[in-house]
Image (cartoon, rainbow, N blue to C red; front, side):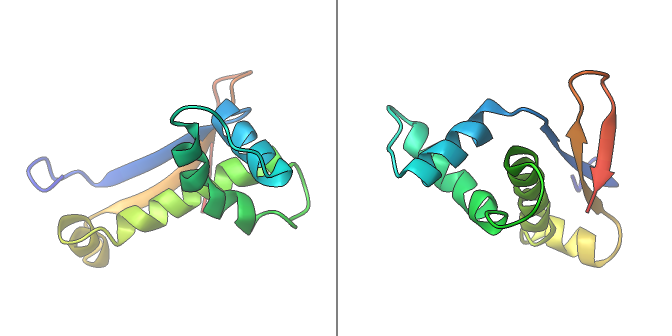
Length: 108
């Protein structure tokens, strides 16, 4: 980032994400997925839990929340990203990729 003077990072999720869908099911059903998937569920749990009572589609809500949380993490990643973000040399945004038409909807 510092060497290339990157002005923008886009955290991009996609609709109908199977990983997020599986995490939602695992959390709601109190089940443990096989193999390495429990670590994936643990990583997605903050997003899933944050939107558990939110109106709308739970899958879309959790997918977007995960991207938003990842963007927030990048903004505070020390030392390079946080410094660039705080000095307004870097912008971090989130978006969702629409599979049906290839559109990307940006959100905060």
